[in-house]
Image (cartoon, rainbow, N blue to C red; front, side, top):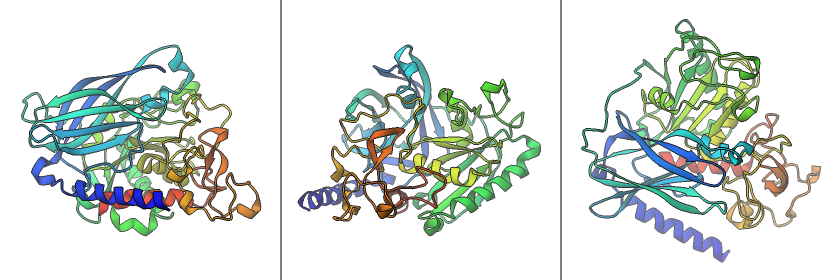
Length: 425
């Protein structure tokens, strides 16, 4: 109890400090997009700047400018040069980070294009990039100074398309803005894409706590056609000319549907204000994927697509981890069992109090037996994060574990609600 009170006091004190950052004092109502290259292998990673772009909308909060959760494996902190004040921070994951946990990363190095977006600064700033080490501690890896008045910051719009308001509840500054962008829909299939967006909204807001918060979301659809219909399926030698270059078999996992064409994703998303990017792929094949504060992706024509929409949003929006185990998972080195995993819905019990111990009834044993007696109880059930042993999940079932679940468990729901509040209050 004493530890909980101390943490609460720290959070409240932090909130008071962060609340003193006045958006209009430091930022314009538009985005500075920082494209960079991330290179490395299992043992190291390095950063190098690609380009800076000015984009017309800022979809994020103007009130809560410092990330209080740090659920990402990477983080940027922005400092005003004249005062030294930290004025913005965000944490996030990347496809590169996932690749670094595969067996391939032990035998070769690769380079991925990545992006962070920040509110467009009015004055010179310093941006510091952090990566987590094997013990999940942030280590500063790269520092970059930005003069926002530099004429090398391009305002050129690379890919401009019409935008449709699917759901609009008010100003982007106090709503969660989702921009839906299509892949594998041709010009003649744009009406089909619109229908799939409407289905997305229906399925998305059918599950708690999303349905109770529908009035806190804006959803935009970018009408961006591809040359061909469908997506790549490498194992079947199917290659399609699509706008975002999505593909199944990411990291040689059949259902993992993602894209490495980061710049095109960002170019298309920039047509609307956004907090989250969601790619809808025109295929009936089961699959999808999501990366925290990066993008979500899902096929649209599969019978399970409605549940996949929501599951992947749990990853992309709230940093939730997968709660199932998988013997053939490509992520051989994703979690260090000697420390707490970063996802808020997984624990190694190393520091259970930092996770969801406060939601556990004192009569519930930890670890918790996977028996009917505890089917609807919050506890610590072994099996999660692709591992059968050593990692525990909050409840027997959850949509982050199985699509047979009716929705999110209590721990995942609480986390999602916290993020909705962060963006909207």
